[in-house]
Every structure is written in structure tokens, then in C-alpha cells.
Amino acid sequence: VWQEEHEGWCKRPLTGKEYVYVWADGVYFGVRLGEDKRLACLVLVGVLPDGTMEVIALQDGYRESTESWLSLLRDLKRRDMPAPKLAIGDGALGFWAALRQVYSGTKEQRCWVHKIANILDKLPKRVQPRAKDLLHEIMYAPDRQSALQDVERFAQEFEAKYPKAVACLLKDQDELLTFFDFPAEHWIHLRTTNPIESTFSTVKARTKRTKGAGSRKAGLAMVFKLLLGAQKSWRKINAPHLVALVQAGVKFLDGQPQLSVKAA
Image (tube, rainbow, N blue to C red; front, side, top):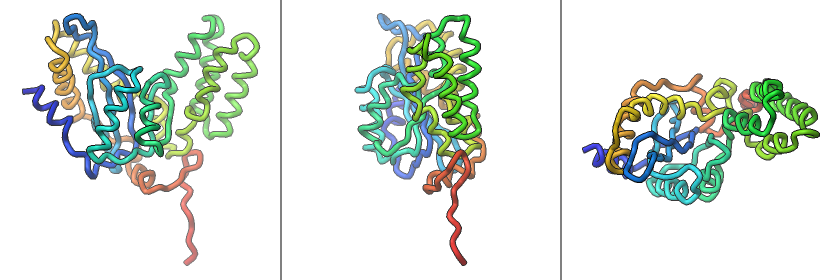
């Protein structure tokens, strides 16, 4: 029954579903499926113009596979889902190449938590605390100019001895700072993929108790039911009224709306 529900849900029409923000991630579960060690899911969570969060897609796949993400996004477009304003995800995802093919107008925001972890991996442990502090200053800068100055400071301090760490930051610099073009009240949601990861921590805790779902379809169906159950307790994002402004095309500069003033 769960499998039938999941299959029907995956075919539901998305006409009129205007997701303003979407988070993308590849999530792995400890469910044993015969020779497959872990169940892998492609997950997309979105925010509607009223600020409500909901699951858009849950599909079998692998996070590094552009083809898997292409299949998912093309299916969503075929079911009439319009282009989101912003997508948030880990820079390693094959999702980005797929997104540019299917929804080329959607802006890109890289996850800061993943990026910081990747940069720190390229530094010796003795300098990691200092590097982490500087990276947090960029992440939590009050405006884009301050963030760019902090990026330059990080580069000056570490370029000579640790060029790979600096290159890791600079190659996604623009995509790391996209959130400045959106409401400041939403930055806490937009800087990371935490909306997906925090939700799936509870789902993973439940799936750890199973000895094996028997098939990939059964595993997906179980995750689907747990996820939709968790979704019922999700709250709207901060300042939900501002989501409609983003959807309407209002421009934001360093988190503040740039509303044009018309003469009376």
C-alpha cells in the first residue's frame, strides 16, 4: 500500500505549485537492501509563496549523478512545476549541471556547512580553528561588501601555504554569497541545506531500526511515509510574508527590498 501511495504521489500534477526556494540533497539511509549496502534518495524540499515548506520529490538515485537529477527535474517540469527563484545545495551535487539544463533561470546558493568542511579538510588541524573563525565571518557578514573583504582576508592569510584551501573557497565564491540577494530574514534558511538534513535525522533514526526493507521500492516507500509524517510538524520559514515578494520579482540588496517609489 505504501509503495502504491508513493508511486501515485510521484505522478501528482504540480500545476499551480510555485516553489520559491528549493533545497536539494542526496540522502543515504542505513536500510539494508540485499547486495546494496544503503538506500540512496534524491530529495527536493521547497517553500511555497505563503512560507509553507513541503517535500517536492523523493526519488531513488545517487547524489553525484547528473543523469539522476536530470530525470527528476525533467519530470517535475513535465508535471508543470515552474522554475524556483533559488536553489540551495552542496557544491558536489550533480544537481547543478542538471538544474542549468532544466531551470536555467534559477539562482544558485552553495551550502556553507559543506563548503567549510571541504575547506578545513585541506588544512592542517593546527590552523583549522583560525580558518573556521574567518569562514564564519564571511558566512555571517552583514552585507556582500563585508563578505568580499573577509574572503580577501582569508585568501591573504592562507594563500601562500595552503593554496588548495583558498581555491576551494574562491571557485564557488559567487554562489556562496547569492543569499545576499534575498530577504535578510531568510538568510538563516538559505545559507545551508539544514532544512533537509535536520528533517532526515529523525527519519534516519527510524530506519535504523529495520533489518531490511527487502527492495528499493519498499525502502523508498518507508522513507516516504516517515517523511510525510514529519512534514506535518514543519513550521513556515521566518518572515513568510516576504516569500511572496520574492516570488513577485521584488529585488533585494543585502537583504533589503528595493521597492520603487512612484510619484503620486
